[in-house]
Image (cartoon, rainbow, N blue to C red; front, side, top):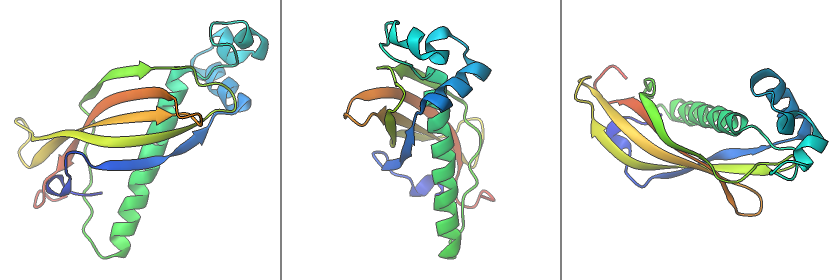
Length: 160
């Protein structure tokens, strides 16, 4: 992963896509969000969603999984080029989480991450705070998910 100084506001990164199958929706819901419209096809069809709907937490978890996998891929590529890789810190939080449209069984959501702000951390010398907006769009080009999240990113020379 890049160091704080190497990241530009406006940088856009496609992090991947996930297809929400009926099986994956029901499995996630049974464990983490057991509401009827996430668990049963008929209940989903008769709900406001009009079909078996993925939990919003499932949509967000798929996004997080793809974000981490993409970061690991970028780190492997940097190592293979002989570059130093920054080890990012935790996230101090998120805001503006939105489930814009239902994600139904069979939908494929593509996630994109755009850096919207960066600043030096006042409380942690040698670290910056990066803020990015991640959105998810279904196969019909409709926005279905959005979140603004921050992460601690080391500055060069901070031990990376």
